[in-house]
Image (cartoon, rainbow, N blue to C red):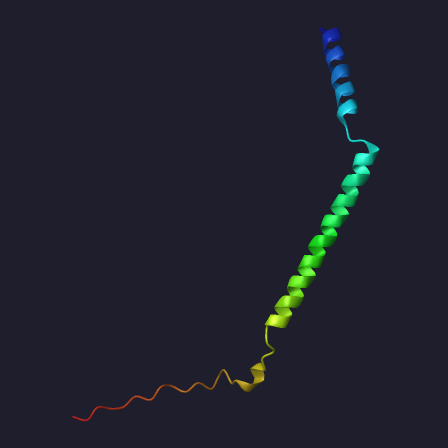
Length: 78
């Protein structure tokens, strides 16, 4: 039983080594992930710039939020 278990583990380890990533694949994956990260950063920067350009600059100091006039109500004559 021990021999079968050891043989199975040895075969499994050989399988992992044979199917593992190659050095070229790792470099290619790293380059791809850097490219994707750069693309995402560019899109975020472009969208932030577009949002800043689309939002007009508003002077909020001109509006007094505490001064609100109530609508005038006319009294009915009897």
